[in-house]
Image (cartoon, rainbow, N blue to C red):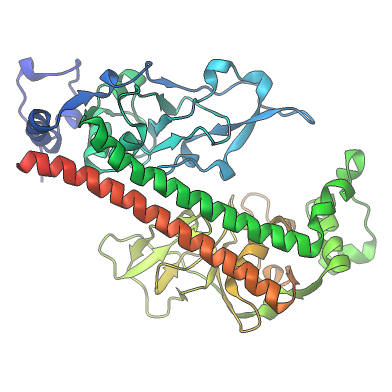
Length: 460
């Protein structure tokens, strides 16, 4: 069914003639914004910022030399709901970065270029205690005045009202995009500062829980490393020329049925030898009750079954999955099953099912159900750690599109500790995941408060 708007020439804004800008949904919201302005106040983003909105840049030279100082480089894929995923951000050498490029603490960052509207408008805040970072031309940097709480602004942009404003001002060309001046035209609710701070505090507390979650997971990693003596790796790992090639015997290539450099990289051999010498290990296949590859299915909005693919593995969990119409013989993952990426650019990416009772999974994922001999939370940490990841990378086959065969996954070595230590590590991982959920709930509360504030003022 066709949808259109009738707009007089005098009502045209910013020399915009495109239909998306005057979509009936956005035009009907304008009256709500007028009522909101009368009751709590509304401002263009450009009126509440301390400096013009800017983007970052991508330096031509990005190669990092040995022992060179680096800085985090955040891009579209690392800007998440509320926070930046620094763990998956890349690095740039400091020599190619100017002082003005560095994002100050308290700045809000927003994705402004993407293939679909859903990518555009993702907003996070860079806190003063976050790693120093810069960004590229696809991300806008917003510095608010002292009279406006940036944490409140972050919560607002997670709401439907905030997203609609960003999407309205975006332009649908080859990609969905905004420029910095268009970002400054976005409407923002402007209640008194005390109200902003009260809502912003929920976002701050969300970060407290996120930090606690990170620390719990780091403690689990440190406990594993201490048990295996992995803290000694920095001084024992081969360096220089010895770290770039391996010398192996013919019997080793026959055993592996591989002769490529990737399979016998110094890193891979070093970690494998370390595990053999310093730990009791079991092959992964022995520890699993079941190991099942998924099936590719179509996302269906009104589907009957939860469905996930690699993109839904976030923070070692399955989050915001889609829906599908599952076939009777489709394999389903259950609570505490592990899902491992076995195809594509992110082979080895792993997450645990915590928020869904049953869900279907795509053909690029492998579902692993643990037996009674190992806790899935301990196994999650062991496989997510470099000692697990380097083994997955070692066993990738295929040139154009990498792949992990089930028999190769089953050969991965898993270090075994005493039952008390494994239980302690599993508990730390379990608590880390729980704290992350609490953090997300606080962010949802902040979003709900913003929406309630807006809708309550409109309806008053």
